[in-house]
Image (cartoon, rainbow, N blue to C red; front, side, top):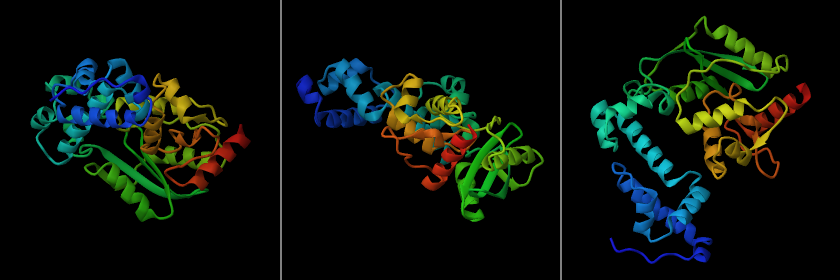
Length: 288
């Protein structure tokens, strides 16, 4: 490939940033196995490494290396979901060995690749649906902790969300371990319990786990912006990725993603509806 001429700083600061980052993404996606270094990637695109790093993090919310790792992991997960044998999926996704994948399995998958391959097969999730001040409430849990908390208008809607999250798990209504979780969440929604300190059993990438841990650290009655959460986890340019992590949160309320608002102070979106988010924030301000 012919080397492109270096971009000047002035050019990189305008719309060319987007084009360069898009090119970088395509290069990374085409060679997930070798995973080019920042210098190699910059050389192929004809830009300064430091400038490429800043532009990439500003637009994509992560570094080029982090993006490549996430794409490689996403490719592996896709192949596992489609039933490809674990060893073949690991190498086809660009990982050099299975050992490194299994060492990072708990942080990146929330379970081993063999278990994730079948969408959580081997997990036994019991669930129940009850009335709550914010509509129908589904709580799903394993023996280790809460795996799903969903709010909605119908039982069918909530059940679809649970099965979509864990398509290969053994899911059934009921379970003695659910009682204390349901009681705690309903009491919280009724304003009788200011804090929700419940164990969780969920799957997530390492980045999302860091975001969710930061959300759980927000005091009741307070809010943080997406940018503030990004700064808190050491990724000040990852505000957009923080928003995506909030949207992917499978255990609403237990991990309080409703406490994250827009930079202008507006409430912003919420997976279970902006009106529910507004009610939750108002209730927490009053209880605090």
